[in-house]
Structures are given as structure tokens and as C-alpha cells.
Length: 216
Image 1 (cartoon, rainbow, N blue to C red):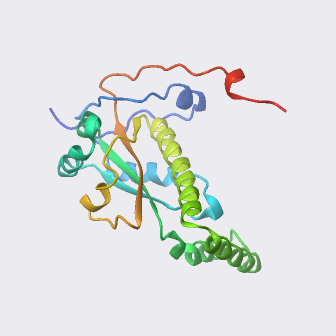
Image 2 (cartoon, rainbow, N blue to C red):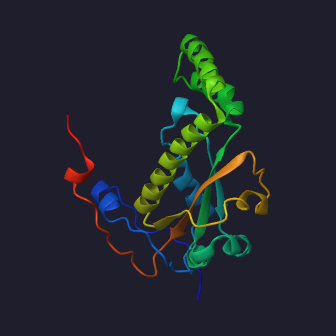
């Protein structure tokens, strides 16, 4: 059977994207997502907000058979998702992301998004803020930002016609080193499988708002 590489039906229907998203466990292994389209998905996901626009997330896209075979032993009970999906996106945060702060603020000026005088003030404030953070506080900030980009990634994938599943069940202590990354610098957040469902995901119960929301 030939590999399916064409794009799936895309949608801008927000209700369809949000309300019909399902976590999929088994994918059609014949469906492949081109690196061009995956780049488009990741670029859209990267429009997610982050503290001081620092964008600490880093993506490791595992879309080759060799890469999946390397990941599978680390993925415990998620191996079927790993091996049948079009790709697994391992989301990390960069603990040294402060190194990019001058580039981020400088580009904002260059592109006309921020005046130079505002940049000078905000850059010094941002550097002071990050210098004041404890390692634990910095972890919390980066974790929150990486969670935002991960959810946005899944919604963007749905808009492109693909299914996803976020996974925490994998060996976080080894994944960076196995794929040649500095484990002290790149901290794992989650794995996200992406592809086309071979079996549709099941709907799930959501608690009513009166149990989860307080008005004041």
C-alpha cells in the first residue's frame, strides 16, 4: 500500500476543532505528515503566549521509523501510539532560554512591533525579573508556557485534520540523552502523538461548571 501524504481536510470551525477533539490511541500507520506541513503546524502552535514572550518550548519531531524504534522502549504503555502515529512531538523547555532574550527583544524592534525606548526599558525589567527567579520558580514559569504551546499544538493539528494524544507515560530521565540532547538544559514536558485515527477516540465526561467554577 502506498503511503498517504496528502493534506487532510482543514477547518476553521472553532466549535468543530474544540468540541470534536479526541485523544486517539491507534493511528493509521500509512498516513504521513510532510515536514512542510508539520512546520506549518508548529509555527502556528508557536503563536501561543508565554511569559515576557520568552517562548521556552523546544520541539523534537520524531517522524522516522528509526526514531520511533528508539523512542518506543521509553514509552511504556504508549508504544502503540508511538509506532502507529505519523509522528511524535516531544515537547521540552530550554532551561537556558534567557540566552535568547536580546534576540527576542531586538527582533521586536527590527520588525516594528516595539519602539526602541520601550524595548530598552522592558528588556532591563525582563532581565531583572529572570535573575530574581529561583530554579523552582523558573521551572514553574517554563512549565506553564510549555503547557500553553502544547494545547495550542493539538488544536492546530485538529484544524489541519489530524488527531493527537498528549502523553506523560514515558521515561523522562532518559529521553533527552537518547536523542542527543543536553538533559540538564532540555527538560521534558510531554509527548504528543499526531496522525489520523485508525479508531476514533471516545467522547469523555466533563464535570458541570457548577462544580468547577466560582462566581464572585
